[in-house]
Length: 223
Picture (cartoon, rainbow, N blue to C red):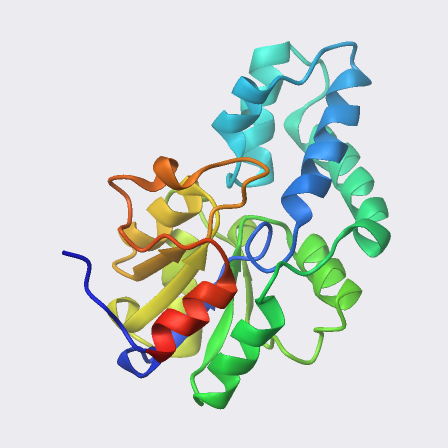
């Protein structure tokens, strides 16, 4: 049986960003597809499914090997990040209920922050694009950790920065790899699958808390 929680059951909330707060997984897909095509290859869904939610250097290691790309991973990272940054300002939009979820956490007086697989420049550009610069003081990038998601490192660091024990944190995720990271950190994970790349069934065995939107998360936590 799934345990029912209220927002007051937690001492902090940690948000994933891409796909959870904003629809940027779609933008990443656009950038990755054009990027791989620039090398003369087709970017297929089965390849993309392997990398969603991973840190850029880690997923580019997968793509470099799969497509036998000549540039180094750092070179590939710089090239792809440049494409993503160009798209963020005009192409990224908030996910349904994102601002309401942030406001609910603020109203509850809980500390909160971001734990993202994206690099700091992408995190900052994304928050700026939504006018959310003043909302997130804590922005943790997996670039600063030994291992990216699905390892728990970035979630554990976010909890340390917030001064809250991991088991007292609610993590909000959109990808199975991200959910695995949060659960591995000992957190309760609520998943809102980004249907551009995954489905509710993909979270079977990871977390029982799966919702259609952040509006549904808010409603459930308030009931």
